[in-house]
Image 1 (cartoon, rainbow, N blue to C red):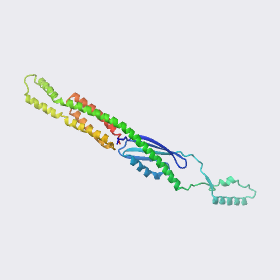
Image 2: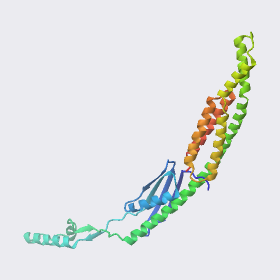
Image 3: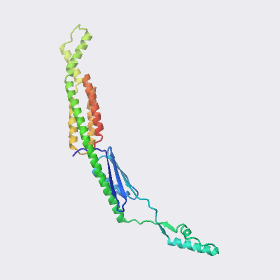
Length: 297
């Protein structure tokens, strides 16, 4: 199983049973855990829980934003006649006509314009139709999830290549550091002898055994073999995680912290300019590794 990225985008379209087109848009970015945010039109709130469960079955980490857009056609509301209100209105008109002999009879549209005579039709929910509507929306969401999964997998393949290249770079720098560190005791001795000659101005020689003891002390203080060994172990552990391929992002992020700790200690204990340079290059490579590892699910 290959590693997957937490970043991706997907779109899926469909049609509701009544012919209304809809579009799902899913965006995913890095996150410490899985956070699914849904934006649904009114009347579909009941879908939130099952849609979240569907996303959780696909992904382990990442901030996922899902937006559903319905392309409804604007339709004028349908008006219906209220018989009871009409009867009351006609009775009122008849009463007025009796009180005002000779007055012109009111026009029909005037009667219909009286409050309550005409009202907006209230649609009675059809549970069967609502179920079919929710099923179509859920099916479209499933398609969008599959596309998002594929997008994150494709980005994960690119991440795998980048991370592997960075691990190779770190290992190469580590090998160079091992070779440089092996030459440090001899370099310490040369520098110490030169310093002593300048200090004593050639008047007397320091006993060889005392010089050896001082060199051994300096070498012990600047011994970086343990750090370099641990760095090599971390490289192997990171390669094993990449080969494992399951959601290993958290483990990989923790491991990059260990990489950083060893490269920092290497720089602090460096006894030569060459080793210092290598430690700085290691720090830069480790930082790039950390940035890329933060994208892994």
